[in-house]
Image 1 (cartoon, rainbow, N blue to C red):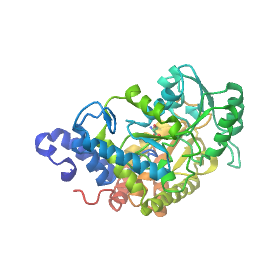
Image 2: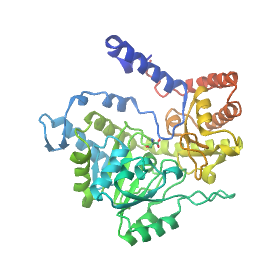
Image 3: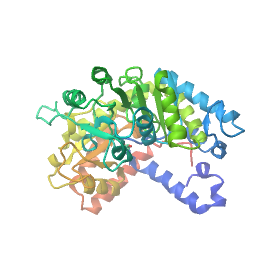
Image 4: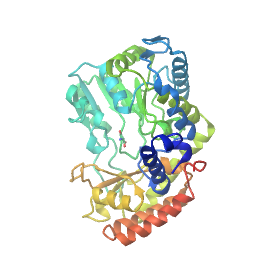
Length: 426
Ligand code: DSN
């Protein structure tokens, strides 16, 4: 159990302290391969756990509805300035509680209910807030969806179908065109989207939730200044606290700010905004560029090694922090659900994911999504990626052999011991 991280809870609420200690232990002794997760620094955790959690700050710096906001103003201004400098943006809103509220705020601020929005299909790599019928986005706006090109032997398929984006944009004349994915292992160039948006007079929104840290680290093209609005989460590759942010040009600043507050949210989480400020500073350091580069190298190494184990890589490889596996080439009968659960028992944490044209439901799936941001933060490199691929192969060839899963679990524990994300915490 962590003495430093649970501190006063140990005596005041040992039940919660025990759970938090166990979670820290889980994060330290199992492999974190969920592409949207990371290990924040102790400084980010300290800011998140600060007394700013006590403060109500509805409004924006200098225009609050409650008194006592001098330091909330200071920290929110600092976060805004840092993130604008990091990405080269004209305007920033750092209040979104999550990526979902950031995306919804863009629709709320820049479109009317019922307007047409063009975005990527969830089952081909998009996101719930890109118009899934079960999301408020799909219920409120008229979404038209694009997807990826068919798979092919050469591994040049399963790429965003820009011809389809253009055709649909010409036909549907959307108010907003959305770029961005949650399960897609390739670079997304914002320029073709810009050209299409200009041709049809649409607003161009780039959801950079996944690549935000890669953009900050200079290994993915920056959509800021190309897109009209860029949304992202702060906790994935960017390695900050859980939350969202929106960057835009001045033209849209008022509409975006009004959509977040009072449109969608009440009081901002100023303690989380303080932690975002810390993360934005960390991401502006030269070491972060090196980190982003290593995230990519590790993803490539993991993809290569998994391919040698017999897994088909969706899109044939990776150019970012993700590796998407088609399990059917490895074992026709193995579902993403069974694979994820067996890997979990062996201490390898990842998530099942639909792959393009998946015959199985989103709850079962034929794919797995892996990511390297967290274990790269912990210090792992290409050799460890090769080891992880072999361990995954062993697990997925023996999903019903609890003895083999237990043996892998112990090897995982040994590997993790050498790469503790919180070495100074007991
Ligand atoms: N849940 C996030 C992810 O895992 O990519 C997207 O919101």
